[in-house]
Length: 158
Image 1 (cartoon, one colour):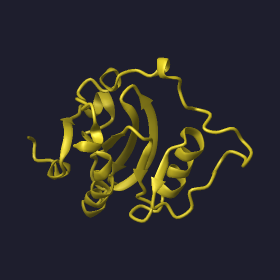
Image 2 (tube, helix red, strand yellow):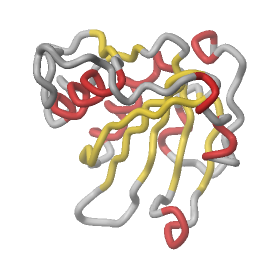
Image 3 (tube, helix red, strand yellow):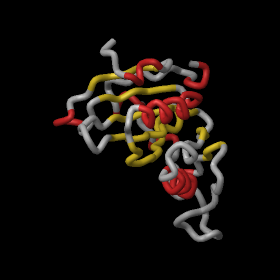
Image 4 (tube, helix red, strand yellow):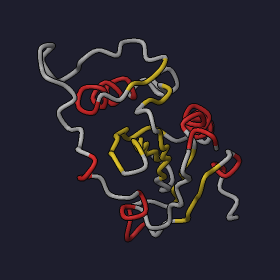
């Protein structure tokens, strides 16, 4: 394709982005089992983690990881789609992910396997969680949010 370093992963789809329109130079959709590999590739390429968030789409839970570099512009987005609201933690690769993953756990009930301290971060222990989960009727298809993304029916198998 375009030779981006993330394309060495088994990508479900990838896309060169228009930074003026999206704030990104590249985006990739990967299977949940590739999250740690993507984070390791980003670290090796000199990127830092900006944030981790999740959103619910009709196909499942989409984890979105934004990476960037200080020296050269090149903000990228790694996204993974899970049907069971679970991903592997990258907190040991990027320590800042600890906070972001705990926030996703608080508000969406998303679990991150291998996280060293997956306990509530912002909500009180007796809060009814997860407060930001949507009813099925409120979820849109992945391609409504990201028209370039071609999500498979079963992303875990990819």
